Length: 145
View (tube, rainbow, N blue to C red):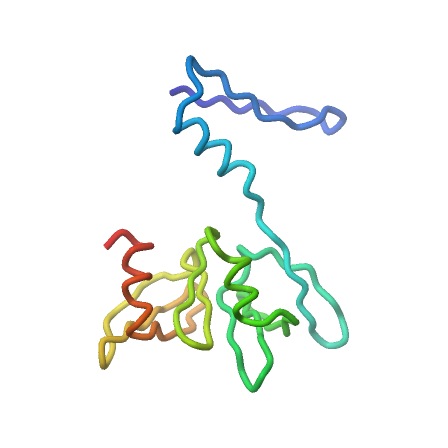
């Protein structure tokens, strides 16, 4: 399969054209991936509201009845409940890693076994997150282990 990219001027509308002999499952999968956009969530910080792409969030954590989204070097309060974010994150490289945490798998730099069957994930920003024993199989499946 040949892939071509052509840069165009700002006046022209962007489009993606797929030329194929037959529309099969692979083509449908490509189209689905292209159509699935990167959702944005609203994050609150210092009386300001920020639009944050889901792909920029390292993890969500519920603490004392509030939910926070952690970016590379900033923390935002999020108004959604953790279970609502879990639904939003479905199919977007995120998974529930513990009762109070949702991790972005794309931000994990390494993982290693910890005590009692848990795993510990080291994120790209240097933070560490625990993957509870019951969620380790989900992580392994997502990583293809």
